[in-house]
Image (cartoon, rainbow, N blue to C red; front, side, top):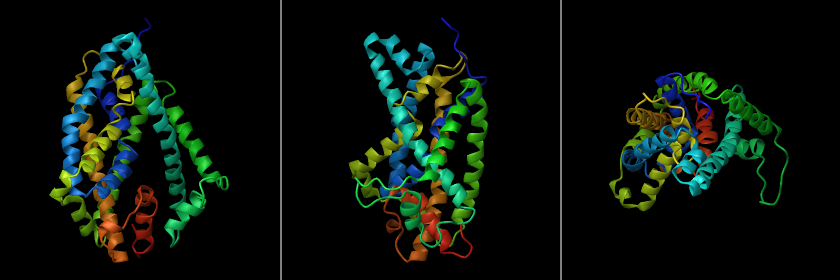
Length: 314
């Protein structure tokens, strides 16, 4: 059997797993799901689901990969021959998520370029839906080809392929930039977000639990879905990462580190987002609960709208 590569160090493995877990699911999806499910009440449900289901399943996937010394399909085939399809199913889910995530990354790449000139002007909603996406009024109306989004998609896929080109060797180097860099930016965003006028109302909505919402099954379903989505469990990714662990690496302690780091990133990102939402609510004269009506609006419309409505911006 060909000798399998291993992570160059424990810190590289931890950063790689954190890099897989932390992403738009923390910065964008978590704040919106929290916003749509009552703010503070969702945080409690999220913490419970993380401790009861998320971290234990993370340990399980690391353990399967380490014990079987293989990715998801090979691991499940080793466990039982007829289970190989289950591993490929997990890989398929991961492929679907990577595919649509690369499209979302194209939005981010384009907005990075647009931000230099605040191209959305005074109509961020119209700019996003009409100029960036080119949405048509009917599902069967194809619309025009959006060249900037295509270019952003190409850049995103080039980055993905380059990041995994030489397996653990490449990933181990990339994660030092892709994990630590965004965290530094996140700290800047949090400081700016919580110091905006009206940010206090947004933070109160974020941190104040409405206890009755914990009796709503949808809140718990949203919480456990966010935990699984954010930690990347059930997608075969963590099994593959676990297969590159050396024998001396402790699965339990690393799973706790990765799970807590992922959750803390999401919670900290919430301060930046809800600070901006509180600012937008104050400018529009509406309650925080009425600022955003859709997931994309949380990033592409509301914060940018707040920027254009204030002389000091975001």
